[in-house]
Length: 623
Image 1 (cartoon, rainbow, N blue to C red):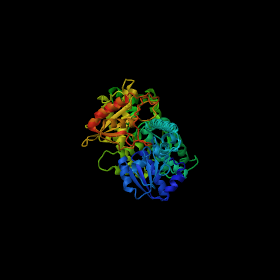
Image 2 (image 1 turned 90 degrees about the vertical axis):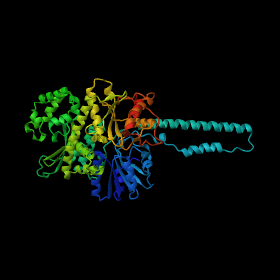
Image 3 (image 1 turned 30 degrees about the vertical axis):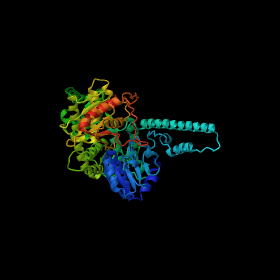
Image 4 (image 1 turned 180 degrees about the horizontal axis):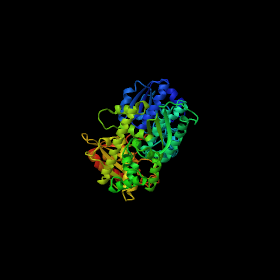
């Protein structure tokens, strides 16, 4: 059930209770958690925080704590599956779900007692009507039973009995036909509703709206909401139009919290927090790096310059020469550059970028100042926090990395934030080096209806790309670079499937599906259904443990046969679909009544020996 009044139906309910927080391992969820923690601290609400990285951890944690709690809050997990079916809670257990994953499961939408959805109604949800997907089976059985068990008067003529019996048979046949038609229509409605995965309004923004409604919003909460929104933009989870719209909403709050009259003096301390709206450069970490390194390791510029080639390196040198920036200045830290160059740097880069075909070099964003020394863009914090969450070093558990990333969002822990920035630089370098290796060795191949790339076990930084978010970023950046490098127009409209080794001892790989890189893309992903169907048709040994329905884990050899079977099975049912620019497959093996399947994912873990048949199945479905 959708919660209409977050304050009365959610916050005032849990305010006097002891609650358990399940928080997914992504930056937006961490920001929403920080806002909720701040509210709970204001009102002395008792809570327990449990980080969960996947469905298995969520189920295990719920089993451990369900006897101690009645109220559970799920952040960025749980909305797109039937929670009651998965967790099997007691009847008095209540779940409050704040999740950006779409589509929302229909059982969660129409459950009025145990599921409370903290989701904005102004999002384009397009939930099917209740009567189209739910029907009272007992009532239908009663009708059929009454018709078949009806007793006839003992004095009736045989001809009357025969006529009455024929009418009953005709009526039963008509009702069965109506039920079959309703079930077929229901399957079509559910498939159309559930076939694409996408993301809605940032959970951090939802929590900030709650704080604002209660007049408890602070500048720190506003900054966390900004970081949550920026995380969605950095990972291409939302469209550019959605990002600009939400930036406009937050900009009004920034003006309200950080407004000062011109005649005010000495009203704020030197080390205060200031948030400001800016049109800044689309360069990753450039204020904490050298300008040259940032240009080389930002996907936007690296793809357009084609920096993996000698010609691309020459174009970069021409770009720097056009701006009139000396190489000595460009290759040293940004903070050490001459002040005279930094004053007009943004305008110089934007002017030269336009000449080189990069018309949107500057984007709407926000920055935060801690006194005069520390300044961060929202995207800087996103990259740093992501790197801390998926730190490939084995000196700590997933929970330790979660806590470290959560602490880095506080201004009292700037040392952890700077550590995250250094890890982010390593990750960006590794990403661009891997992209250059894949393109120069032609690892990106066309499988017909999609592109495919597989990282081998000996690949440098393979441990880093076994993580779902890192693999997602690598896949998106690789697809962008491939689109600019290929001359094949058809390949520019194809999605990408990418595999990376997960565990060499267990022989597993992680797979991710990325929609095509087109300007008109609505950021909807159909690989969840495709992976699910391919896995079922090939009996591949898979693990679906990610909240994002586009990650998949598979045993290695089973991947290609699965891909081929996926393409053949759906070829007869494929239909053209406007908008995203790719095919729509229509397998009808949807989940049981009223539930979206937990096992349809676009990130999947797969046994290595099953990879070949999996890829064959996928090719069959999508061709």
